[in-house]
Length: 376
Image (cartoon, rainbow, N blue to C red; front, side):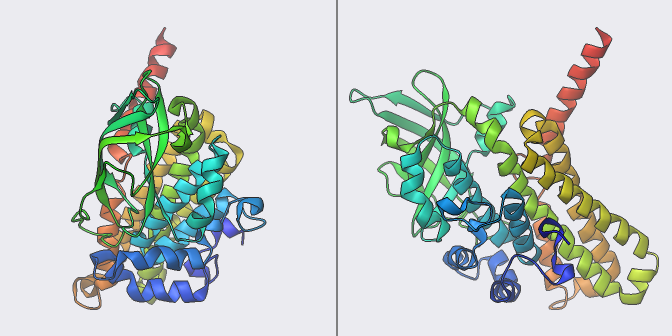
């Protein structure tokens, strides 16, 4: 079994047993927010989750690549999507620095990010939608007399904004009109964090809004001067790691369905759909990792969108099969607590930015362009 296809069903993987046990024990508390969100990041860091796929020379684990990073997020999501959401944000921010020409910024922050002392938050979902023409950038910059940029705007939904300290990646319209990508530290003047958003699930994920009120930055905080050049290169890792949430949830729900049904579900009427969906998730996961590894999705982002949609749909189907296999037990407390959490987690997957509706809209536009070209 290759690293990218390992799962909780096989009883092996990239996560140490102490982390797996901790996530299993606290999954419900991490979902409803009764466990302090500050506990998540250090646990994941101590297990080496963020070092997967980082070059050894930059503090990463030898012999690993981006596929291992996606698999690590997937295995966290098998046990807690709230924790996987944090892992996604942290690892994506690390990826941004690895791909930045601003080596001084990366050199200054990679070590505390990899070690979990500093949180990394990605507010570039807006920028990803900007690339596709879905919406405009939400932060503008003007140039001050001393040459610094002065930023104003808002980031309405950002995860991993750990109150103990964070860096957030944001896309801004530069004074010359070019979209740029910058990093903002939590304690910079004018950056205001809201209280945690009241989410239906995934509460221990430090998800909040940020107001940007006259924030002044110099070139040392520039991740890349041109988002149009930078983001298409970073998007496969951004979306690929995000797909780990769907992969992990689908795996765990399918396992729970098989265990709940035992002979009835595994060999009876649910046996065939369970096996078919399990094979589909495995094939999609392998295609995802192969495409991110070989760079295919840089030139063909629509193929990545299709996989993201299919994986979110598969996770929702898996939860439905778990409900059918469990029957009334899934609706009883406390026996059905795990199912109820996975039901809420599955509801998040279609709306995490870019949402499935936005992705399907982009695919429909592409089909319309291809049809118009064929007809011309």
